[in-house]
Length: 280
Image 1 (cartoon, one colour):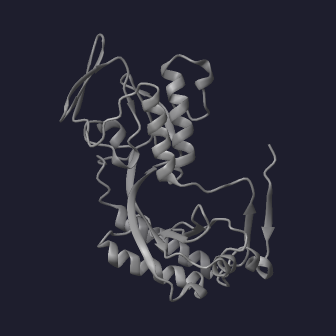
Image 2 (spheres, one colour):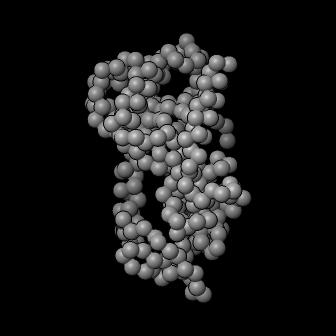
Image 3 (tube, helix red, strand yellow):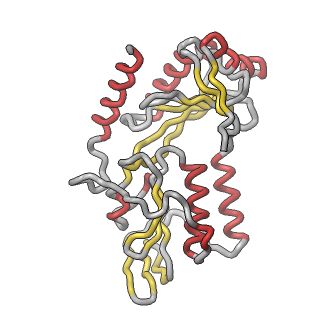
């Protein structure tokens, strides 16, 4: 399938963003933005409308396999089930050591501005499209879903510190990228876990009789939703469940058990590669 894309030279980049720090970029049509909280709310409502029980704040502490299926133990009780589907990504608990060894959780951060005037929004992002930097430690910027605020993120994998200090750091990066935003106020700063795989690919398959889908590498909304659906089809025996990512080798590293003690140095190395690339 052809990709609808266009290269934007530097002299035209103000058509997409009020910034002079880039040397042009690629306009990739066909992408979009969404409100992940509302998507989650809709999925939960749809599941409950079909008779599913959705139980929050109920971590799995152990899974025991037996001839009839599995016994899943949680703080709120035990569940007897035929199938187990693990889709915990950056929040994979010790109850799933095989999966936990194969994803590296990292904190991602976002800030939101106050409500901005339509004129300022049109100046910052004239096309109303999201922008993602092409580097190892990228920043990203986009309008919110109703086009009244700027959402800005980055510094994934760096030390958390406090959200106040992270907000100051991201504000500095945002105003460096788009100077006309200097002086606007922030209303929110938040964080959440993404999960990187060692081969930078999502993975889906089965291990020890349990289904899994994880390792979204910061593409969790599209890939997680798609592969979650495909895994559900696989559990029900539907041949339409097959994907190119099924049961691929899911690498790990020696002595890694799920605690990313090396993340600080890995991020520093990637930042060094970014600086070297910019000099070249």
